[in-house]
Amino acid sequence: MAQQSDHFKKVVAHCKEYGFIYQSSEVYDGLAAVYDYGPYGSELKNNLKQYWWKSMVQMHENIVGIDAAIFMHPKTWKASGHVDAFNDPLIDNKDTKRRYRADQLIEGYVEKIQGKIDKDVAKAEKRFKENFDKEKYLAESPKVLKYKGQISEVMDRFTKAMSAENMEELKAIIDDYEIADPESGSRNWTDVRMFNLMFSTQLGNIAGEEGKLYLRPETAQGIFVNFLNVQKTTRQKIPFGIAQIGKAFRNEIVARQFIFRMREFEQMEMQFFVRPGEEMKWYEYWKEARMKWHLALGHPAEKLRYHDHDNLAHYANAALDIEFEFPFGFRELEGIHSRTDFDLSRHQELSGKKMQYFDPEVDKNYVPYVVETSIGCDRMFLATISNALVEEQVPGQDDPKNVRDVLKLHPAIAPVKVAVLPLKRNDERLVKAAKDIYQRLSLSHNCQYDDTGSIGKLYRRQDAIGTPFCVTVDFEHLDDGTVTIRDRDTLSQERVSIEELERIVDERVNMRQLFL
Ligand code: ATP
Image 1 (cartoon, rainbow, N blue to C red):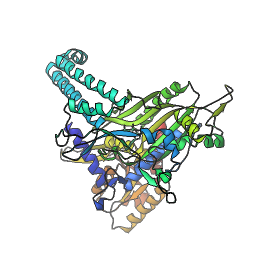
Image 2: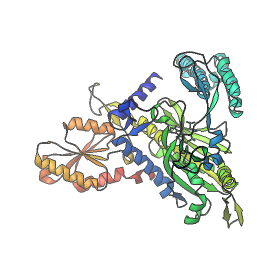
Image 3: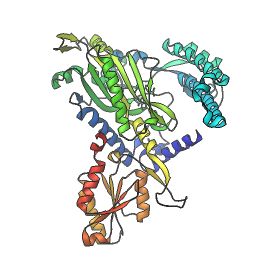
């Protein structure tokens, strides 16, 4: 556990030091849970978005993309249920004045008990070695059974309280189990109350409630209200999907864990419109397809898992998360939701406009059902970078002190694809040749020319930002036009012509690699 949080600290520090992510408005001591992407961060984020867009929109004949505005008519959020039900249970600690989500405090308590079980199992495993039968131990150990009993007792009360939105019961759980402020240990709590997560603002020309606007808390509604426009103008037939990438805003009560939970973030969402009754087939389809998308990027299978929802949202008839093992544990990375006809029906009701589709195959008008895939771009970024960052002994070097930080990103999403480095920065012929190569490669890829240090230092820097290839231009180049190309992961060096160089780079960094 200590090791994991050390890795998390390292990821956060690395993101800042190498120009991936900065705290927003840092010169004014920052703005909580808001972050800016730096030069390499914005490249990496754009590549992740491109990977998503390509696989979801450009590689599906029946999915089209849109880019809806952030501001929407306020009735949108009444229809979607966000005005009345987009709430989290909030609790304040009277001593520390710190604010928490009551549900997360209770979940944290349960995680602690689970931690005791894990510790117990690890101890027993050590003691019994190869004779250890984990299943049997979990089913029979009196200590484990006691902990399991505690968990199911709390979870039972918690699940009931959450679905009934019973704030008194949430407070009673916190009191009964003596759940304390994780920072200070104080148990001096206020009552629990609901807190709406939408940010609001005001239209300039209309005063009062009438002019109240919201910053969208999800991109999905921009898709629903455009369902008819898109279907008519693209003549898509059901089943078909509409996708978009865009900002969303949530006034999160507790926003910690870096870019995992932000107040301004980006979503990549796709709503797939299907014939009623066929939604479970498509739900299964997208569940598989989205997992494959994650695996293709090189994320290890053991760091990804499905988590079925116990509590379904008011609009869903099935829902699951794809969870990723972040440095602080398994957490939601993406949601797959079968949203029924809830959203379109609600917009139909509140707008008075028919949100129907005529299906010639069954000769019927109906409101389509929807299966949604929704992933946070920033969470995807955090998953990717925390998985890619490794500290390792430099390959081929024996001295244990010879370590390097390297971002082992898939070459197709690396911020810089090739760094072109002249062997000597004060040799005009080498500098000119290296700049010419840089210009040539830049026509196809994001490249970098760098002569600001010794070759060894420049290599380390490129490793730290995940550049898959470094090209060194030395004196031999002036005679025969060849250069050396160094591979980030193996450190192998090959002498090649410029044409070969272009072919090798194209082959490895092309996004096509992710779909083969
Ligand atoms: P959580 O339970 O973690 O608050 P959620 O279930 O409310 O997430 P959804 O409404 O399903 O999230 O949003 C879809 C995706 O958007 C999530 O899977 C996540 O990747 C991303 N997301 C949601 N809230 C945030 C946030 N505050 N910061 C960054 N990404 C977020």
